[in-house]
Amino acid sequence: MGLSDIQNRVEKEALRVGRDPETVQLIAVSKVQPNARVEMVLQQGQRVFGENRVQEAAGKWPAFKEVYAGVELHLIGPMQSNKVRQAMELFDVIHTVDRPKIAQTIARIKDETGSCPRLYIQVNTGAEPQKAGVLPDEADAFIKMCTELSLPIEGLMCIPPSDQDASTHFALLADIAKRNGLEGLSMGMSGDFEQAIAHGATYVRVGSAIFGERTYEVT
Image (cartoon, rainbow, N blue to C red; front, side):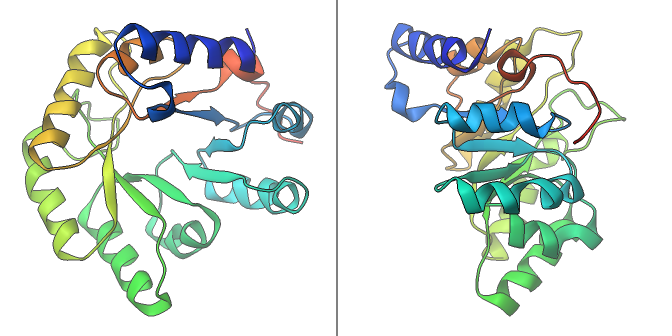
């Protein structure tokens, strides 16, 4: 595996289901990857990256951004309310808006600074107690609340349960997005991104299939 292999698979699946491959963006998930591996992928031309933790990203990406133009950074992990301001300064897109307190904090900082990343609402499609995200039957109300706060909600994100058919969850997320007039769908990871593309994913989040297995030693 590697970046070019994943890019080819994304393009092939998009074409197979009658989609323009340009409508699917690949996020290279660089969390807990050594800087040498990240730089190798940057050198291959990848510019869209995903990180799980604000602190890790803050220690890694400012230096890379000075060298590599056009980097777009996505926060794909849960966000603590005390990290919102830092996240908004560092990330171009936040995929994990998942509760009123976070939404209200983002709105307050947006009004104060006049800027805001693009936002995705995380939906806990499997209603898993250990997982972040608004529950599916509460999603419409939460989307409405975020819209009333004038937040730039671009779409929805989900992480399906690992022991269930991901397609069911991708279809559910797509339905919620459609009825709320949202076009962005952040869904699909290394093991199921092709299924996600078939269900309309606009962002797929792939880590180990690009970088190799994580070492959990950050350099």
